[in-house]
Image 1 (cartoon, rainbow, N blue to C red):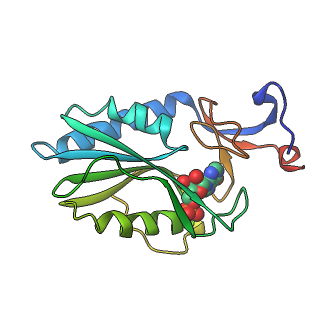
Image 2 (cartoon, rainbow, N blue to C red):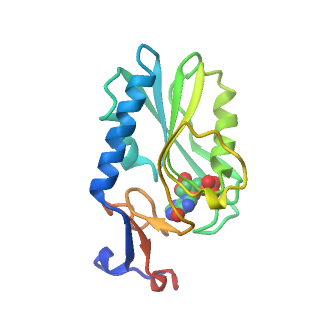
Length: 186
Ligand code: IMP
């Protein structure tokens, strides 16, 4: 793949602005703070794409909470398609038994990654486990996933920015956008 020196040159369309994302994250934080009042909340985020969302969301939640991080890679897929075969590169660093877990995800596409993760985490006996996803692409879902909190439903396009990458690039864009087709050409 080739990308421009100025990443903005590769963006065809801004789907969600920085301001729209910030407002939505604040709203989600308020709802989560109200829903989990008095409970033992642990936010679990999945690297690397969820990093900006996790960092912003945790600061919009007013409850005492713990955070933990996992990293997974799906293998057998391509840079724009998930395979559903998930390898855990980094596991949780503390037990979640008895805790209320909020799984913080950047985007749910086919749902295969999350389906695997939910089964894995349920095996660790949390008191509850709920998904909070910034973006949802329902048109591409292959497995039904219960999602507790969703930021935005988006159309079936490959998006980049605010943590999301194409070939590990574009994660540092402050908005969510669609790539120009030329950026996909290798
Ligand atoms: P799923 O298993 O198909 O639901 O894919 C989940 C993972 O694929 C996400 O956590 C992202 O890392 C990645 N992904 C899915 N769609 C996109 C996209 O449009 N842009 C960037 N990454 C994506």
